[in-house]
Image 1 (cartoon, rainbow, N blue to C red):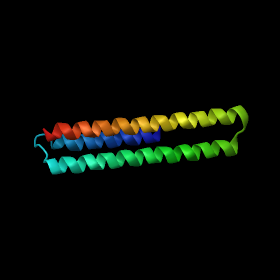
Image 2 (cartoon, rainbow, N blue to C red):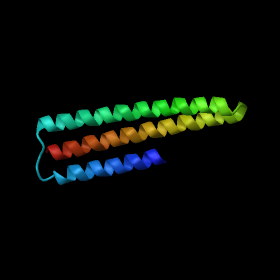
Image 3 (tube, rainbow, N blue to C red):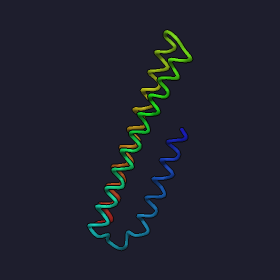
Image 4 (spheres, rainbow, N blue to C red):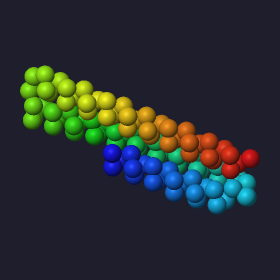
Length: 103
């Protein structure tokens, strides 16, 4: 939940900062730099989701057994999928904002 809130706040801040410059089109170099930064952020978010999944899965192995362990692992995998989907959505939104500012 906290990660989603942080991502939402970061997206809002990024959107507001790009909105401030919406009156002036950005140069191609600036757009390329912003796209590269957005992609790097996306990859970092995906890597963080994978690391969190591994940590949660390991915690499930240590603290539970049997059906509870399988359910815990399933929940960890579902959370990882959600985190990756949030990261992808944020990346697409960032690219769309950059492209809108580039026109």
